[in-house]
Amino acid sequence: MNSYSSKLVETAVNEFSRLPGIGRKTALRLALHLLKQETPVAEALGNAIISMRKNIMFCKECFNISDSEICEICANPKRDKETVCVVEDIRDVMSIENTGQYNGVYHILGGIISPMDGIGPNDLNIDSLVNRVSASEIKEVIMALSTTIEGDTTIFYIFKKLKDLNVKVTTIARGIAIGDELEYADEITLGRSILNRTPYESTLES
Image 1: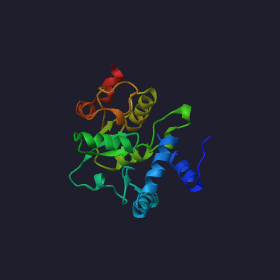
Image 2: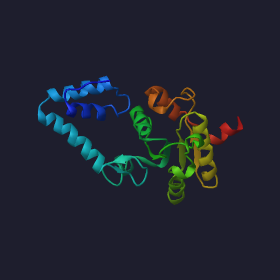
Image 3: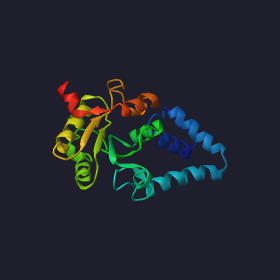
Image 4: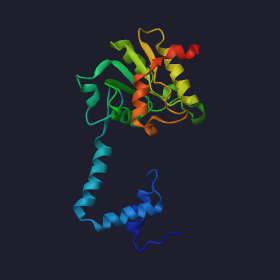
């Protein structure tokens, strides 16, 4: 049982410890560190968090985080709008962007199909992907989901939805270990897996 001489510090520790990967000892170190800083430093941190939470938007095209209705990637005229990379969440976009090997745009599903977790197709941004492909000049959809049963199930479901549309569906090369998330793949491996992507139909035949 932790004992604090200040309820204010205890409250700060409780809030910090809600963050992923932050235990109570680390939370206490963070709280005490901020306590040692000048007031404007703590205020800047607090204001940045509040501003982010209140003002952050999700791109109307791809569902990426953005400061405006359309994110910087979708708004960039130099990006290849005919190629869409489908990922599970925002962290995957960041991982792929760090490789410098991809110049298309993205579509963030917001998860993968997982009946065990109560997540079905209607809980994800799948219909919007189908509508996006139907209404634009997209020529290729790259499936960059985790190589798990849930990831494969999601890819197969989307493939069936897109099968009758005039679009090529590919998957990233399986250079990433089974079950690994894109976030934890090194940039070289991830970059190569995108460059060496294969038609999805060929994986069904093998």
